[in-house]
Length: 159
Length: 138
Image (cartoon, rainbow over all chains, first blue to last red; front, side):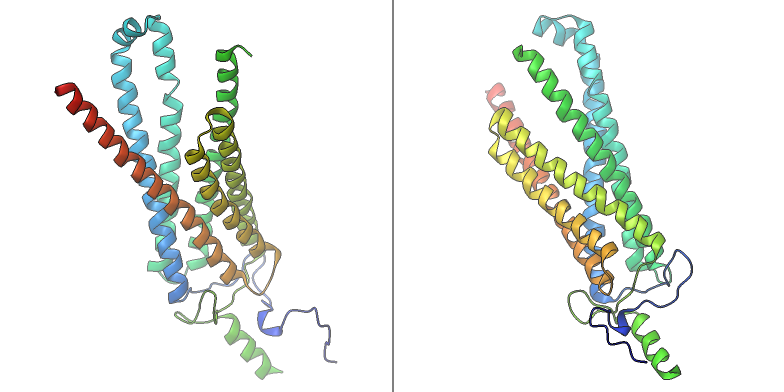
């Protein structure tokens, strides 16, 4: 008997049987590859920028640490405090390097979706996993920075 | 019946170049494992968008930094909308590929905004550094 349920999706959109847990492989078309390729380029570019910022930060921290005694004299505070403040910037540089690496890797996986055939969905899922990792780190680090910045600011103004 | 199954199979597995985004689209339904990956990406993309909004609020409240707040909001909106589209891929059926492309486009826009803003900031920083060096040298 024909199913007349108006809320049922059309038959053409019903995925039908697939392997447990996974869908069948799918090859993205030209328009879709254009979108994926654009996102791949932008993701990779942002990853490279984050890597460069991270590397430059490490160099700047190294230079500043070497000149800590000079900075301490200029600011009129102890060398230990200056060194601690400089070293406190190291995790931020490290996070930039890790997140940058994840974005470059995600961009590479997205690029592979466009350039290869036969495993588009698997490559897309790998790219999404790497993007998720980068997003997660960014969220946690930004929240820590915001909360930490709030408490440091509050301490400085004496709240 | 066999003929109908054959037609359905053709519609579900388009060959290369058949697919499209926003138009006549070769459709595909992601499986449960893929939905789990997409769901996580959706959650964290939206979380990143929400954190950008919080950062914008901090910029406004702490230093009335309108420019910084505006940039954070713009990037946050793209991440949030991208995450929303990814969530729809999991929650709906029949438009998985189209919604995935919409999500990727929006996430790409977030990166594009970041790249443009960072490029401008680096450019301005270099100009300021050059001017400072020239003033010191004079």
